[in-house]
Image 1 (cartoon, helix red, strand yellow):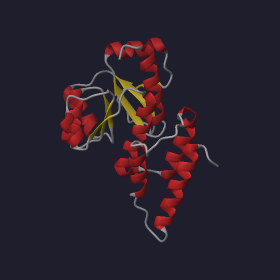
Image 2 (cartoon, helix red, strand yellow):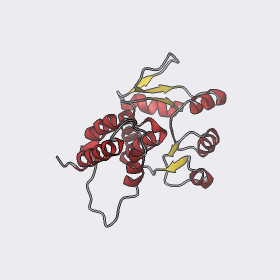
Image 3 (cartoon, one colour):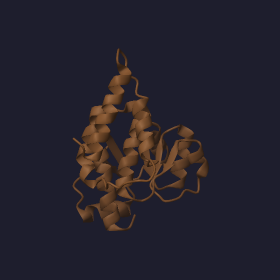
Image 4 (cartoon, helix red, strand yellow):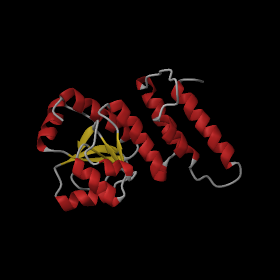
Length: 201
């Protein structure tokens, strides 16, 4: 990614995700130089120590086996590489492809890869969806996440339901909640999230 502005906006979006889960970024040397020149404060250097529970951590490019190990233990991978799309599909790890198209359509049809385009704001919402799809959804955490980004969400009347909103709502409805009144709890939590996301009180 050679555009300094696109790199900054992308890493700012990823840094939002990294406030809740550690993100490891094996950076190409040219990209690492661009990050240094842009003085992006959200990006920290990872030296291989145990990862804290949050943060955006840059490391030098990994060997192939080390990179496979990182992918295998990830809850999600964000990439613009065709090869990584195939490897995450083989490993069964959810992948967000940060491009407008893919030359690996089988990864999309297998259900492990989503082509999310090149808009950092869209990447942010897709990452929230992928996090929900892993079964790690924490409704309170998702509500806090939406509250932080609500000023960046563009409200637009649609003639039909947005395809982006449907997977998020479906995954919320699938969360395992044990005990009495679980359906009512889920409906109430989903309604609250929708009201917060839409700016209603």
